[in-house]
Amino acid sequence: MADMPDSGSEEFANRMFSMWNEAGLALMVSIGHRTGLFDVMATLPPSTSSEIAASAGLNERYVREWLAAMTTGRIVDYRSDQHTFTLPQDRAAWLTRSAGLNNLATGTQYIGLLGMVEDQIVECFRDGGGVPYSAYPRFQAVMAEDSNAVADATLIDVTLPLVPGLPGRLRDGIDVADVGCGSGHAINLMAEAFPRSRFTGFDFSDTGLAAARSEATAKSLTNARFVSRDAASLDENGAFDFITSFDAVHDQARPDRMLAGIARALRRDGIYLCVDFRASSALAANIDHPLGSFFYTISCMHCMTVSLADDGMGLGTMWGEQKAAEMLSAAGFGSVEVAHVDDDFVSTYYICRH
Image 1 (cartoon, helix red, strand yellow):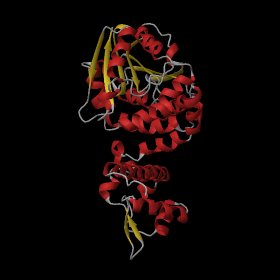
Image 2 (cartoon, helix red, strand yellow; image 1 turned 30 degrees about the vertical axis):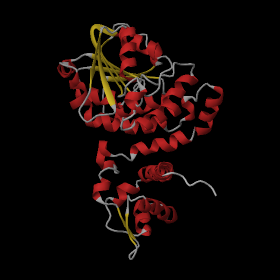
Image 3 (cartoon, one colour; image 1 turned 60 degrees about the vertical axis):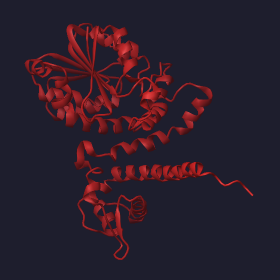
Image 4 (spheres, one colour; image 1 turned 135 degrees about the vertical axis):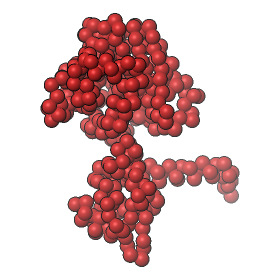
């Protein structure tokens, strides 16, 4: 007779079953976000699958199966006597686009994106190397959706005031750059808020730069420009009073060159604001991080591997505050102040001066 598992072993098995359910549910939440189903359901009374599908302009059979996953996942409420489904408002507050920064459905899109490269990551475990940016066709778009919501909610009123006196200098007019600007939303927000200052976004993504320029044109911004440039080859000397980077250092092939180039690009009294993932460089200190496992997964399957694909350093998402301070100092910053924002466990803010 086979030995029965002890209670601790059985508890771990149950945890694994729960993980299967939650992983599958994450994919379904991503689909609910991308198809707009959560946004539609938040506006509807209790409705049948046919009514929900018609309101969303989607195929009923797929919507019905999705609703079954949402029901068993305790996200949607179901009345079996009437065959109706409801998205309660207290859950809609965390799942709809109208929730803004509180829309946690946005982040579930990363699960499917990372799953697309699993086979290639397995090969990297065996052979080394990395998976290039080109293998992630939607990653920048999802990152932009995520980071734009953060910028809309916090950039002007929370993040920039972390640097003493900066908002006043921006109102008076200074030269500003964002390195690794992606779709350029942060630059455009600042250019709109501070029309006397001059803003430049640097990135090597043609898709991102096209989106940045399109937004600037739509906003009729004349003080924002976007330049195609590898962050490791900035080659701007003493050109800027203020430089930013938002979650753009840790996945670079040569972040050391990027940081040194930023230091050279600043004027003597300039300031560099580096925003990156909040973590310790020591694994033991990250065990209780609210999103530790998720961030290490993103690191292994994107941030670290895209760097290694370019023969880079492979810092990874969780490079941490100690390593960041060490690298910023080595890049030429004599003063590095580490700042945090209450209730923000995602980002660390490094205020750097020569």
